[in-house]
Image (cartoon, rainbow, N blue to C red; front, side, top):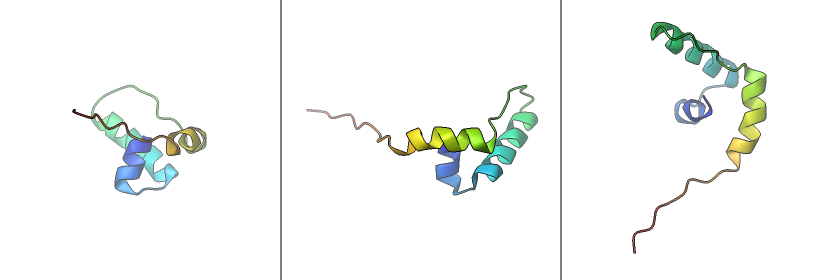
Length: 56
């Protein structure tokens, strides 16, 4: 969900609703974290940097 937020430039509540809609359309019975949980997880997520594979 947090990656989807970064890609689509949506607010946390919008990502929560969008994720729920996508899962419902796919027929999956999965829980979507609420916006407060996404906010807490986002603090740790923001500090991560993607690893670049180096080819020597």
